Image (cartoon, rainbow, N blue to C red; front, side):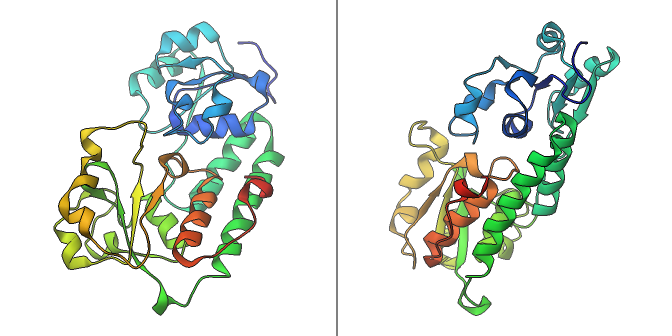
Length: 270
């Protein structure tokens, strides 16, 4: 397994670790990323991913590339991780973060693994500057909008979900918490009438990928609901995974809900 110990070659077999690898590694370090890394709907780093080989999470693919390091997430194929570990490969599994402290930890850990701790600190600092800039401009708690995030198949989220963390950071009151949604719960559209949110977030819907799961938007109740703010489309690539780019989702939400404008996150190392 060739490669300098402080700049290891790496294979990512998870869509979320893909993002961190693509944002932190030198190009020559990246042997391959997962096949979902190239999806514009899912991956924030889809354009960057186009330059690299992809894998489908199979041990045989990793063996052919013989990296120094394999990174994965908790839901990556267990048999792949176990087989690679048995064969002596260094396999590191990162947790799926649900809040900003955990996001910072993942960025820093990946940066250390790849031999670029300074890049991790730069991404964390840029993320935190954006979050602070939003936080300083939020209205008082009593003026904050009651918000419902609607995902394909009429699902919403509450406490314990990364998307809930982003909603809270944008100064919005998550209706999903009121109904005890947890990290994932079906939310009958008829309940919209009784909960009457001020603001709807359409989370993870994709114009380019029509499906039955997205049919919720054609439901008469959904179509007729009036809210204090126009509905907002929030691309899944900004919140499917935990990363520095989550601050961009917070900034977009705050701007749409309250007209708050902060410096372009892209200019803050994001």
